[in-house]
Image (cartoon, rainbow over all chains, first blue to last red; front, side, top):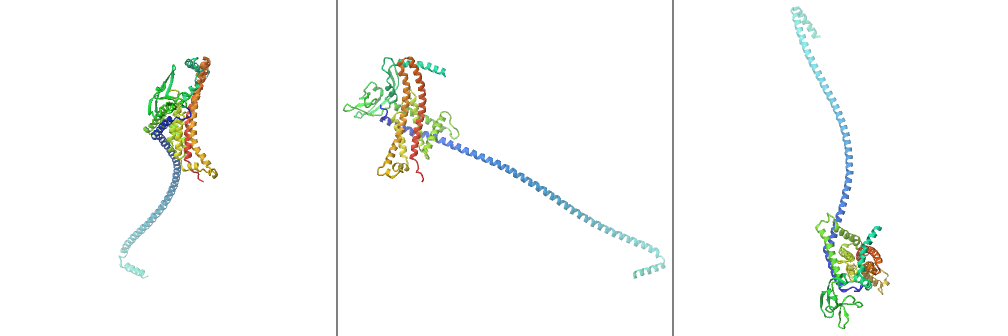
Length: 163
Length: 353
């Protein structure tokens, strides 16, 4: 058989066999393999992307965290400062209030004392007056036992009143 | 290194001796033509070896439809060994149909019947395709049974996956372009078909050894498949480029010079595919056969020359076989790549100006 003249029978067989093989492989062979590989490749790609995103997020998270800590520290300092200020203010206020209260109590006490003193003085005066009246009574009783001195005393009294 | 050469030579010596015995000194000189062409051409039976001058071969079915009213015939090729059978015989050397089955016409002239015999190449094709189907469908069944998204195959399936991925990513995706997935089954089939047939052609004994991809009928059909794939699915732009290319008008009218060249180009592309694969594989077979022939050619020159040159031939043969394995891959790769390029050209979109 000549090498460079294609044999008709072999062409027919080759067409038939290659056609069948192609049909079978194109239907059940290669698409199965290539699709699976493609799916896996897609999966790997998406996984890598997801991992990258997660890493990125993690990095952002760390930055966010440190930011939050910084903020918290600032807040702490602010609160501490405020607390100190408000403490000072409260103490100040309390001092003022105490002073006021003390003054009020002192005033009250003073007026009380004054009132007490007044009433005591009044009592004493009343007592003294009563005492002096009774002394005077007793003196008068003794002095006016005689009628002459009675008249004399009457006269003096009249004088005194009339003056 | 020296030690290894000595060991190799001593191993080869007994191999060289029977060759000398098989070719008696007083026998006719070694028939180089018959040796070379007998190995690469198609034949009606599968010759395996020759024991004591008697050929040992596997008979294959001969299927014929007579052209002079003899009807349909199907018989074993062993009937043809003795000579004529049912009016059919293998044309002798010197005939127009040398080594092919012929029948006698009305005028006594030899005519060729419709010959659909399962020849050595057809049988080889069937065996290789069965192997190809087994390998590819076996690989595909792994993906059917496993969740390929979650796990990757190992072993033989892994090798196949690597090859498939390589062909698809490196050749098909790059050369075809956008909608490459439509063409990837054909191109992958072509690649693995050629690759496995090339490899089986290098295997020197049954079931390998049939010179399938080194036969022009086989490469012709492969090239035709590519030709039809290119031209059936070619887009408008592709046909415009052929029939009305963008060249000065006087090249197209009145003599359609460029369209004619383009139309010729349509056919030369698959023709080059056909010849390239055929010639490369055939040449590879000739080279290996030629190197091995040294063993037989020197059989009459005495033991020393014979064994020495046989050792050289074996070393060269090993080298040639390695080269042919490489060529088997490269030719499959090139055929697939060029087919993909031609398909890609037929799918090209017009450039936006």
